[in-house]
Length: 299
Image (cartoon, rainbow, N blue to C red; front, top):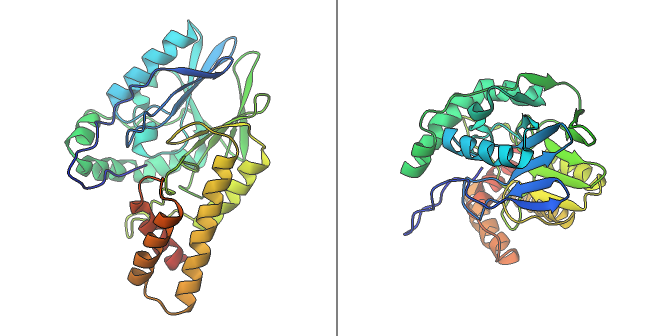
């Protein structure tokens, strides 16, 4: 998730418009193109089925993703999974309402609890976002799993859906191809982007930075060779490590300031400047403050 920032120029409309790129045999992405509120989309082909990872935001983006998936799938049955419930990742699912939609139970429950509220919040992000959300119908998974993992058989290729619970959201899920060592992370990992910490008191405070760090340790333990972040360019396992190190550093510095009696607003100002200087080429620095306030509240 990435809320548009203020500035003289309006952000481009949140439209899935990238050219599909094959990152491994039968594994495609539709890159986000650096556009806010557009995620990287995944399409994984098996012999009988094709798995689509995320839909973009709103019915038109969902339709675009489905069209691309059908062109690549060439008659294969489509299966959809969503990395987490946030609107730009899954609020185009209605385009796949007749397909199998699968993800973990916690994500479905979070969509039920928060979907309408997030829909209304995102509609305040500007005319182009509001337009993209026009006509949204919240469509749930019709196949949910419990526990940490589920395997999707695509025919000649198996894909693992994995979750370790609360982190960026209550139901984050990654998609892992064990033979190819390819990992789709959703917003647990971004590339050259400050971690998106959705700390919105009193409406939503379910993000857990400490558990997020632990999940990133688990992801690094998978030894991925290709990492597709929620937003940004595809990279290697270093993407996971960079986000983990950033969150851990932010947590530790918050604790030091908090122990020294520094008020939260002063901590935000100090750490915003520090993290920008440490990562001058990262985007969306507005999320630094959200992270500071979350770790302050968590103690």
